[in-house]
Length: 128
Picture: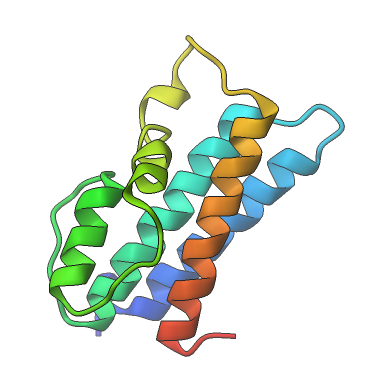
């Protein structure tokens, strides 16, 4: 099985993003855009892990609402409000460039949302 078609490999990458997001918030001077970016990446990779788990293809996208919709079509109802998914999706690209910086509370919310997706996906994938 190729790594791209292995849900556990996707989950492992998602875990690294989750740990990076948490670590970025724990610093004396939190790394806010890094926390937001890695929270989005964690959620994206876990949703893709679920799709791989169900044998579903998906496009190259950072749109978490679109990925959640694909999960729903595959019989997986992701228990996260679309507004929350949309908020996280915004951190995929734009956050990496100078401009508006996220506030500490925004970064905390992003990591919290990613954590909810993480717990849901790990339970479905049978991971501890």
